Amino acid sequence: MDSLTQELEDLYRERYVAFRNGLAAIAGSREEARDVVQEAFARALRSRRDYRGDGSLQAWVWRIALRTALERRRASERIDSEPFDPQLPDSDRDPELAVALRRLPPRKRLVVFLRYFADLSYAEIAEACGIREGTVAATLSQARAALLEQLSPEGLKR
Image 1 (cartoon, rainbow, N blue to C red):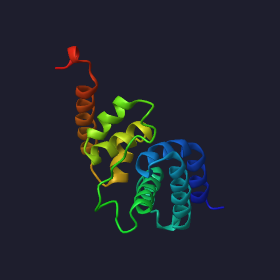
Image 2 (cartoon, one colour):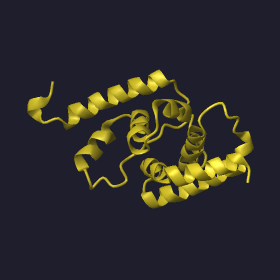
Image 3 (cartoon, rainbow, N blue to C red):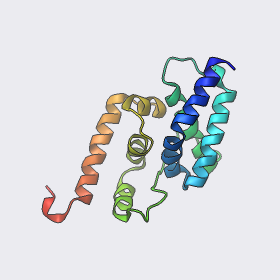
Image 4 (cartoon, rainbow, N blue to C red):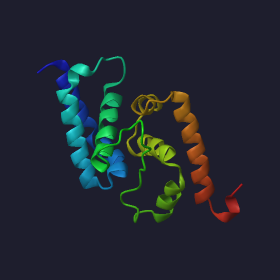
């Protein structure tokens, strides 16, 4: 087994839950997300020679996983041309949060999900989404402000 194959296997074992949780928002359910994660890692394994090593392996797999999730939802669309519309797959757990997240624009929602549900770093989100790290920081700041505004009790709103 070559070293990259081993790294992919280790990444799968260590980060499976984060991938599943983050992708459930895009795939629509945890069950569908499980399939997406498996398919994405299979694709990564098949195309491992395409990984140049100039970025994070995890971010490279995330890009594959995001594309896979979107392809499974809409066969003819790509990550770069179609905005994601992630949603809480288990919105009954916290309906207020689900509504507040739903009010965010899809790209902001995606960055929030990748940061807080998939536990990616700013650099990994930037690489996976093809944006700058500063854009990730600004997007998260704007999203947090919007969520705070929506979720704060009336007396605490600015």
